[in-house]
Image 1 (tube, rainbow, N blue to C red):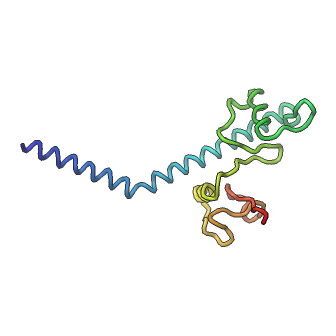
Image 2: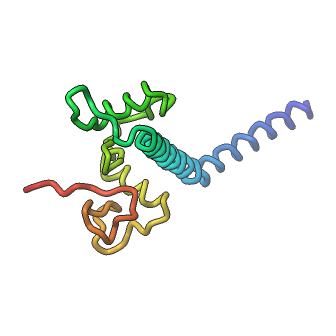
Image 3: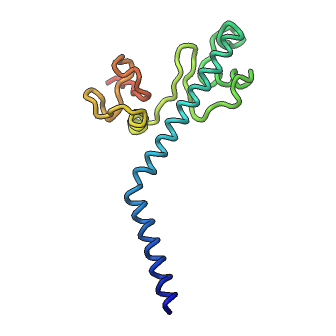
Length: 151
């Protein structure tokens, strides 16, 4: 009987500890997922950039189609993969050209998360919902920005 009581108390204590960890540590788990997403995006951008630079060094120009037009976005990434400059295309939709490389953010929330994880103060005056406007040189180093919509 004593062992049964000890077992029930042990199970109850473990359950309380799990609930407390989830309650107080939930933000830590969510933030680690956000940091992982940010690191994945930075890593993928660095791989694409490195592949583009290597292609340019070896060929003297960026990839072009049969008509001589510069490739962009998915076609450019596929050319890097088929040329063995990249093992596989990175996850998600990327905007890639000779002069720009970025991954569009899904919404303002994702933009704010990227900026927060990168270490920027998302409550800075002039920054709406943690996401500054694109094209403003003040926020050039911020990883996330939003293009203002026309009224």
